[in-house]
Amino acid sequence: MSKISIVVPAHNEEENIPNLLEELLPVLEGNEETRDYELVIVNDNSSDRTPEIIETLAGQNPGAECR
Image 1 (cartoon, one colour):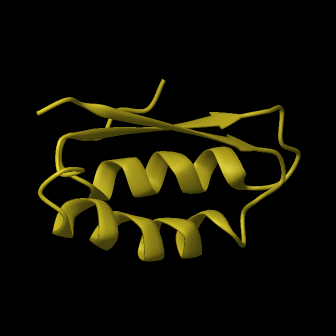
Image 2: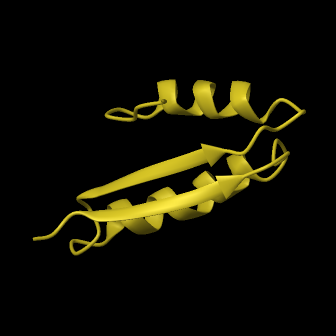
């Protein structure tokens, strides 16, 4: 089974990132073909709380890394 990489650019998306993960993660984890995935959220110099939210959500998801 191949690993899937999903890259999400984020610029001032503090309201949308939690919703995205709430919808996306169950789909990825619930499908045998996509269970081995990596999700990379690229903060594009946001001026809102996007970086903090990404860091918090990464800490809540096992195996997640924030760089």
